[in-house]
Length: 291
Image 1 (spheres, rainbow, N blue to C red):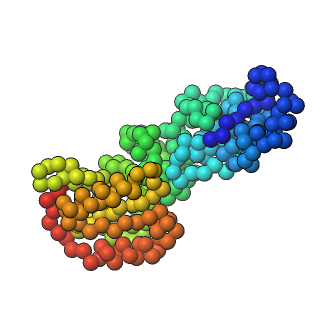
Image 2: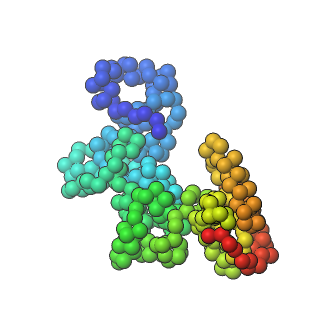
Image 3: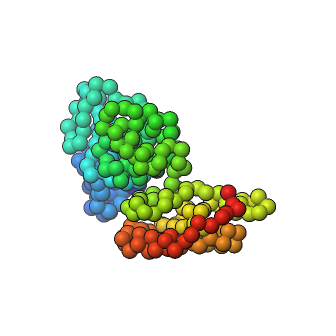
């Protein structure tokens, strides 16, 4: 995220108004909102505006803004959502007053945000069930929320409680392991659109006959002898690691392994689901000696 500075902060460090104007004219800084500048010539993004509003208001980002700042899956901030003290003199779009500001906060991108758990519960009722599931899987994966917290939330008779309850039911309960990426979550959601398809197993550990750990496929159907490798937006060397894992698992188990890319799952879901259904339909239950 780009560096932000308020006019007040710049002046306190000895930067004059004329110097600020020169920096903006030369593209060194860009005016984000009144009183806040961002480093570089790029036009302000919605996230920049939200951060700038939080910074100049000396408030706490909440809602979708807090979620996007913390990289939640399935959430994008549309406008600033900032909490300030009741006696604050800030009058900006998206700013709300509270008698008492939340204390369960974290610093992200130079601004205070609601903690991940508080953010998750706050926005759950505003999200569709699809996006709420993506956000919940992200929070579980990152250890931002515990299964105990989700269990407590789903018992509440609130909008967020009802949405969490729907998500828990969809994922098959709280004992199911979290997905390991957004692409994996999207694939699980895609497979669910065909009720005739068996539910894939997550985080299935494969061992060889000597009880040596071989690998953990993204998603698999052990009884059918099939596992998926998902090729998302990888970091360096990830494709090589995935290919080696696929080779090891295939050699030990003899399972079939279709590979899916982000584009296939996200942009061409219908044809991808049809191809997976055809593949799984040709498989019969097979005995397995791995665990």
